Amino acid sequence: MSGLEQQYVQEAFASNWIAPLGPNVDAFEQAFCAVTGAKHALALSSGTAALHLALRLSGVGPGDEVLVSTLTFSASVNPILYEGGTPTFIDSEWQSWNMDAALLAETLAARAKAGRLPKAVVVVHLYGQSADLEPILAACQAYGVPLIEDAAEALGATYKGKAPGTLGKAGIFSFNGNKIITTSGGGMLVSDDEALIAHARKLATQARDAAPHYQHSEIGFNYRMSNVLAGIGRGQLAVLEERVQARRANFAFYEETLGHLPGVAFMPEAPWGRHTRWLTVLTIDPAQFGADREMVRLALEAENIEARPVWKPMHLQPIFSKYACMGGGVAEHFFQNGLCLPSGSNLTRDEQQRVVEIIREIYQKARV
Image 1 (cartoon, rainbow, N blue to C red):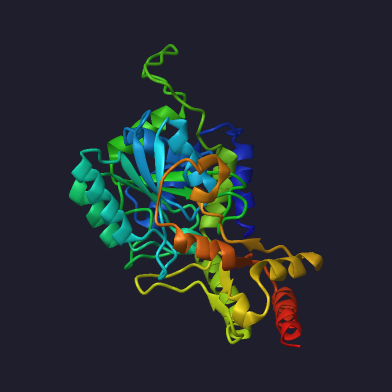
Image 2: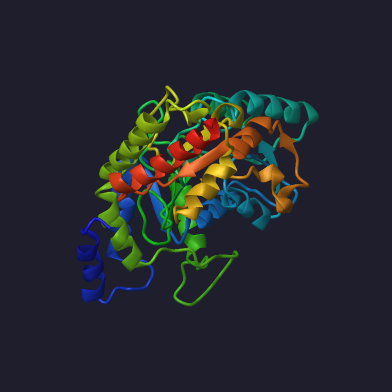
């Protein structure tokens, strides 16, 4: 917490405006637009809720195909299934670890030739870094397929001076407890399409029609953010740049102290924008380092230090294994060899030094 949150939360209590909607919600949406450059924003209960609404408003229904990044968390895929859609996974590229634009273009061309274009494309901006959006957008626009950006992990990143999440038909962000800013739980749907956000706002509030009585003409959801949590978000958003700089400083320390070790390579920063380093992620080549990713993770765990493998690709997940994947080898490489290091904004140098010393010790033992 930045310390600013209490002011806005106290305002919510003082006004007795606790339930969903309220002045903090309105102000949070406005501030979010100012920070990201989005024209319209809708504060919601989660990033998953935002993605669900974006897919529904893109017309995804039973049997419709949606192309989606395979290297991501399952929340990027689950809402496709909520609507009865069929995910097809797209592999990563090496430069940013995000969706391979060339592979996407090939897949869209093949679908067009077969006369069955997907209903939407969901690109994920991974670990605080934007995908290469220009060729991805160009491929989608060439075939009239809407692009939804899952920027849950990428608030504060840039793509050629713009915020990822604001270039497609709709973008989604997450304020879960582990994100670069948090409302404890929450999300945001953004779009330049005012009508889309207006419709999403209605659906998120149980789809109540404009009537003095309770009337419903379509299925709705209870997806709005509370006025209390939006107050936390206002306080958090004010220090977003400080959070980005703290995460980037974490990365710089790890890179300086570990980057020279044989077999250690860090997730690169692509030339098209700024990586927030929401998480510092490295890969370990066991042939050069002398130990594999899992040995390093377990050594850290033995010292009560949590590190996580890179996301297990969706096409390898038991629940999604029946769906097609275009490529897959690049994402599998990152999963097999990648490790997310402790990366919190409040991490101290002493804590980071503990991580570094354990990894160095593993390397040195492997040399004996």
